[in-house]
Amino acid sequence: MDPHLKIKVNIADRVYPLTIKREEEEMIRRAVKMINDTVKSFQEKYAVKDKQDVLAMCALQWASQLEKLKAHDKQEMVQVNDALEEFNTLLKAAL
Image (cartoon, rainbow, N blue to C red):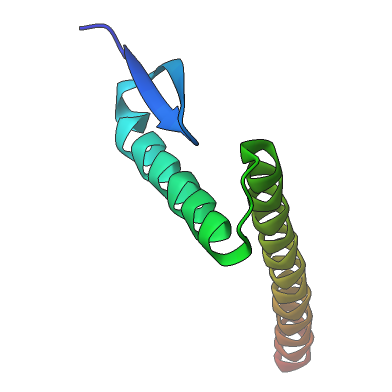
């Protein structure tokens, strides 16, 4: 069986043919739904007619959310590293 699958997705009223791995289909379809839901929300909320503008607003929203997650993950890594260093210090003292 071919590991790839050809599908067509509709994003903001445009059809895009894709070749994807079979195991990615569900994730791709969820992503398409999320994009279309966000496009619809922006159009309703801000009365934006131009799809390009709406898609740019979607991209900006998701990119800023990704940056927040990266910053949060970096902060967590620093805290974990600090805790490990403290634990290591306590271990050395106990030995």
